[in-house]
Image 1 (tube, one colour):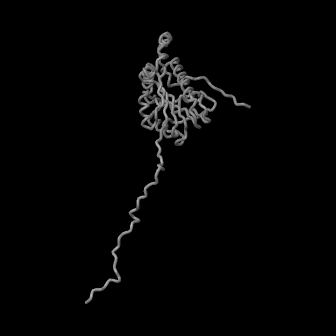
Image 2 (cartoon, rainbow, N blue to C red; image 1 turned 90 degrees about the vertical axis):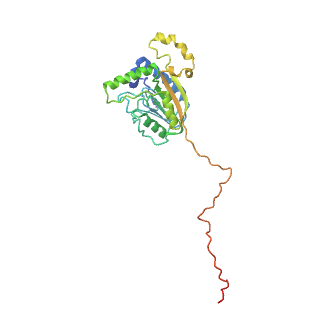
Amino acid sequence: MASVIIETSLLESAWLTGLGPSAARTLLDWEQSRADALLADVFGYHALQVGCPALDSLRANRMPHRWTAKTEFESPGQPLAMSRFAREGLGMDSRAWPWPAESLDLVVMPHALEQSADAHACLRELERVLIPEGQVFITGINPWSLWGWRQNRFVRQHRAGNPQCHMGQLLSSHRVCDWLRLLGFEVQALQFGGTVSEQPSELWRKSLAWLNRFDPRWWPLRGGAYLIVATKRVPGGRLLTSRPWRKVRSVASSTVPVARTDVGARQPGP
């Protein structure tokens, strides 16, 4: 009997509440489309999505083992957008991952860095669990956009109501790229989205739809969100076989000159 595949619709993430329902839906749809396009041909054995259970970023990927893990900043009762191979009930701390070193081929981090209490520790764990040439897919809200302004206002209001609760902070794409390069990653792609859709009304969105024809690299700060695709690079050694290694004579094996006495030498007379 064939197993029944149940897929739930995308739900709004608690972190994206400050953007509003329309902007949050637009952001999740853009991230879902980019994940389907960029992660479909990433091959390996083990893939992991960290945080944002409302997004099913691994549904187009063909790895045999795929997990969606909730983190400490996710709401306990928030359901997962389950795909065929996602595991239900998997939880972890973003600062201490329960995977051994060099065990994952692909890690997707939708808004995980900006919600973590220690983004540096989260990146160090990412570098530890990824295999050499493993890839990471990171998304975040651009702090210099209208979405970033809304999200920062939402974070300030939340901290004012509950000072003991950590709400995270927005990180720019340039800062995240610098941190990745310091850890030995090579940034393969940097894209921006949410250009026209972040306008306050539908009339503005239709009037400015022609902006989508321009290359986002010409106006990178216009995007409300960004995504980064990076590869872990590990420098390795290479054995030179063109000529044999030069043998250096050990000092310890060299003979030490000893004073010689001539037994048959003539003794001096009286």
